[in-house]
Image (tube, rainbow, N blue to C red; front, side):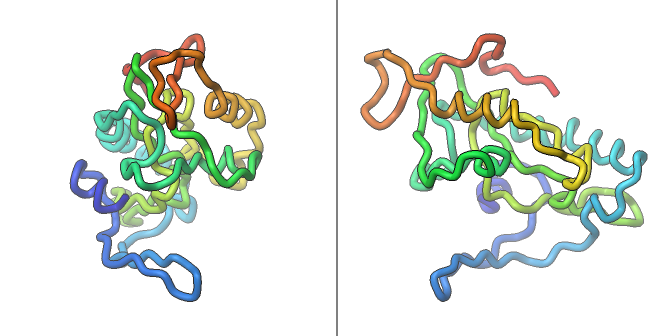
Length: 196
């Protein structure tokens, strides 16, 4: 995903160097980025500065990336929902869904303070890391977790349950392909329009 983000946006990400398997584990090798994680230097002023950067620069670029199928930009990869779903539901596979009425928008899905690297002198974002949960999803998947440290997030049980329900939803439409499901977005959703 790092190569995809680097080639389709100007969002600062670590440079991809290698992906390899060793002793049954998959390893990602990137260039080292300079800076500190936002949660290590967070103050109200720094969080506001970084939030403004994310909302005016990073998120609009991600929202320009759209697709009619949920999940990864690489269709050969499985659908990997965000951590706030998988901590509640441990299943190993999730259905890939296709919408014929709207496009899904690209989401980082785990953009917490610990994955935002900031230059402590300038407070500029030097990199956004940890893209394993990235993918195309509905507006319900937006969640500004960069506003609080991970220890203060708490367990929002309503949102994961709502998102799991969306991922499990099916349609009776005969237009859906054998391996896909036609998605009807939940009431209140805004097709192909996003606001932060």
